[in-house]
Image (cartoon, rainbow, N blue to C red; front, side, top):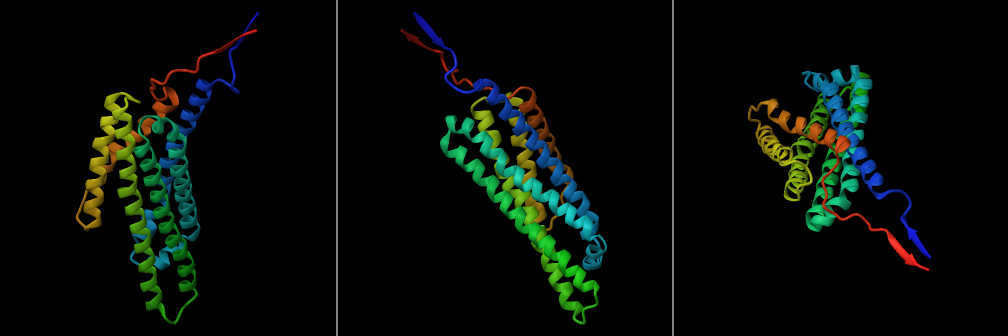
Length: 242
């Protein structure tokens, strides 16, 4: 008698792979939406000449923005963990560099958020009428600088580095259509140029980051709808003769 053990694992591995790809795509969208909302909420508040007064008057808004940025920081750590098994089958070294870049991106952004939340505390004390207002303003400017550099390094450098590694892996191992990966690499180059210009206080065009932002969303929806292309052989049924 022949017994055909068609499944020696719990659940269909292909279904599990598609589930992970859909979750990963959703996390890409979550990270982009949460970071965008955070920056939009903060822009007008931190651009005020009286930063401490502006933050004190909009402290709830600033805290909500900080929470959005923390959601982004958490999402970008989970994303490479989910993609690691796929990349590790192709290139173990780059598979480790990608999550490393995203972890540093998240950590640097969290440092910026800590500066932002500290600014809220300082601004509330400042509004209570401190006799040493000048010192408070100097400290406030320092905390804004911590946030600005955290956002700049986290988003413009380590985020771009992670995007470079991701799209190189996608292109090198044909995990997505070539046009999508090449689009990502071009977008990363523009993002790095914009970040370098901002770091040296040179006027730049914010639109330079748009191609990569759009590409990441296209990639996210591609993961949800299509998934990654893989040539890995499927597990074969195990037959046992009795």
